[in-house]
Amino acid sequence: MLSNDTRFSPAGFIKIMSLLHLGISATPIVLGTLFYFNTDNAIFDISSTDDFFLALVPLGAIGSIFFGDLVFKKMTRNLPDSIDLRTKLARFQTASIIKYALLEGAAILGIVVFIHTQNLIYLIIGALVVFYLALLHPTKQKIENSLSLTGEDKAKFDRVNAPLD
Image (cartoon, rainbow, N blue to C red; front, side, top):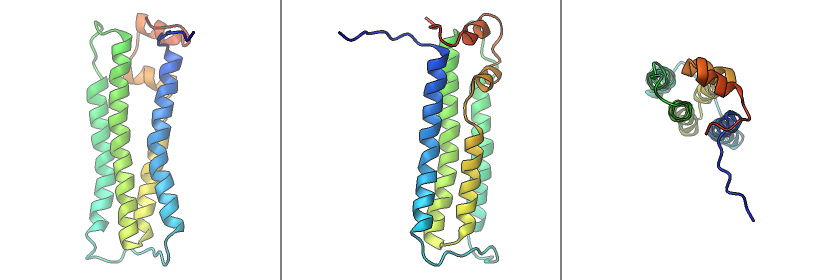
């Protein structure tokens, strides 16, 4: 008979966050690699001043970084102490997914424009966004710092294998 044990631990949360991060990060990596190796005559050209995408792709990348960070901080900072740890972790997860998705979108934009123009600069911008996304890999310390865990919540989160219920 299968056990219906649905206890939720900090270690399980970190594992889930790592898998979500990996899944979101993998898409632009796989797409970029596939399209790069299936492209003939790729060029590196930043001299074309009438190329609308030379403004759009970098602005999209920078915008996704700043907007994602803004949304993340807005959702995870100054949470009242009355909220339980599980709710704080759910808020962190939602904010992280939004931040990761914005970065993934910017990377995919660079890849799509690369497919259209065959200009490597867009693929490089997409790769830089993916590199930044990789730096955001969730760790126990990053989660604690983002949520400003203290007192009882920090003690619960430090017991990584103990259920939060």
